[in-house]
Amino acid sequence: MSDDLHARKQHEAEVAQRHADEIHVRAPGLPRMAEIVQRVARENASAKTKLAKFYAVADGVAEAIYPYSACLGGCSHCCNIAVLISQLEADLIGTRIGVKAQRVTRPTPDRTAEARYFGVPCPFLAAGPCAIYDARPMACRLHFNIGETPFFCELGQPRDFAGVPNLDLNDFWEQLANATYPRMYADIREFFPNGVNP
Image 1 (cartoon, rainbow, N blue to C red):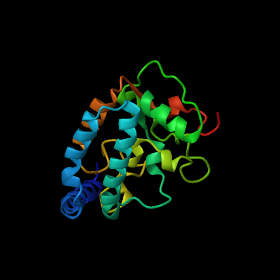
Image 2: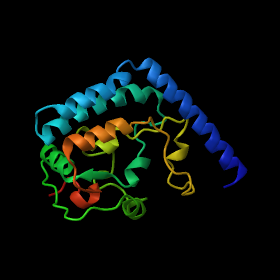
Image 3: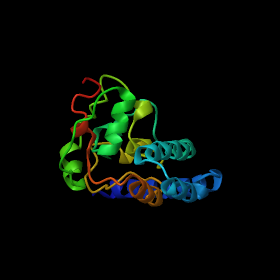
Image 4: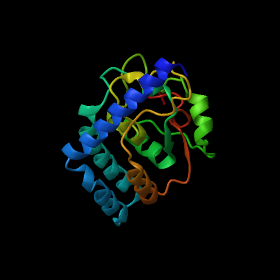
């Protein structure tokens, strides 16, 4: 990596850390997020009902993150990378958009999906913005770049720029997995190869 790229990466990482600290201070709901998701996970409800409630929590988290994000309306860099979802989530999305999700019988390993779908447009990214924005997957709801610019998002960056800076939401993802019992994940393109067309 060139010295200029290394310096740019370091600067973006520092900005992202400042933004993360500020988000935690200014977003009063974030410190309680772990408590909220644990409560949802323990509810006596179906996995599908819990997933819908996790969507609501995720939307609240996204609202807190957005003002500190380099993400801009109309940007679609992240619509050209792998989006792993469970069959449960695919079925919920399918219900919401009126398109039956395909049955996927074998999981797609994370690294395989990342390599296979890097640079491949999501089937819901037609000629314009996301066709299922209101029903988009959890991975899309919580994918933010809290750096200063879209630098890390640009698909032409070297592969060793591993990851877009975002908040540490590991507790949220862990509780979601425990509450919804996903047995396997596959890329959204495998569940909906034709996008919104049945």
